[in-house]
Length: 368
Image (cartoon, rainbow, N blue to C red; front, side, top):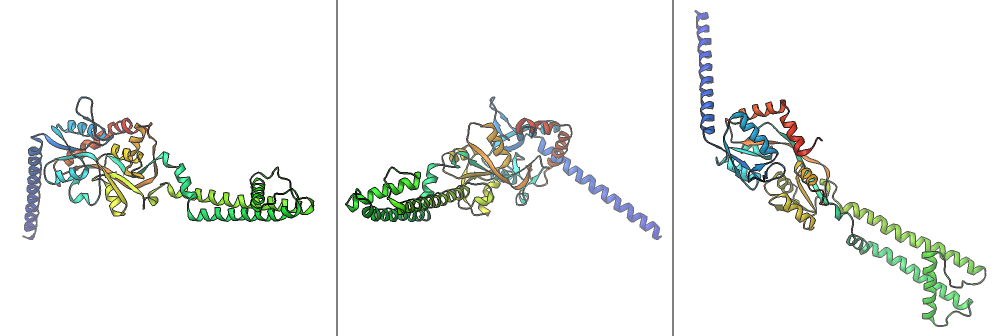
């Protein structure tokens, strides 16, 4: 009796499981049929090399080409809808105004609350772009020299030279009968003599005769070398430190700098979280234009996009510096529980296995 009840319970459990599985599959198939029965609304934003205008008026790019191939694998019809930022794309998906976000969208925990994501199709992160022409300039030199600490060094050296000229004047007036009798004329003559000895090691001025003259001449040379070395080393070392501090070599140098980034991206989130002096732009070309006009100190944005832009524009004096910050993958965005995500991932796996994804990567980013 007990065995019959146990077998009956197992049979009922299996029947219920089978019924639920069939119901779930029916709902999934029905939902997918409802969605793909009409053209999918694919949200994109213009951002080289992921989405760009094609000469025929359409679109091209890494994300565009990948989506078109996956859509063809699944037999999906679609239409592209342009948005200005990643935030707008995610908002449109959450509100049902778009079905897919086909762009370089960084997958983060905060974004998972608004959308589901496909498997990663590219590893990314943030990097810094700087203007190469700002590494050294005459304005930086004047800024160093005019620093109060450096002016103090120059002042001390100048005082030593004035005192030396005065000492030479006192001795010359007593020991050289041909020396000018006026104090101003005599001091000017001595000043010229001291400057010549300090900066050239020689002068055409007649020296003080006798052993004392030789002694003081040697003393002037020694003091002059010391003064010049002191001033030169102080300014040189300060300029070296200023050059290192004035440049941006990594994320540790961003505080206090004007940092440009693209509106609605992970770069904006990073700047907000670290309370940086942030300047927002609608696209990367606008940000690069501001960088070259020295309206900002650097650009903080997605590393693959910066690297592609740099390689595509060798005429521009820009380069990437520092490590990749906040490494994270790119993924296509879907509405929560979207029936499109599973067939999308299946097709993406297939394209990775047959080499299409690798070929596409080489086409846009090179073999490395």
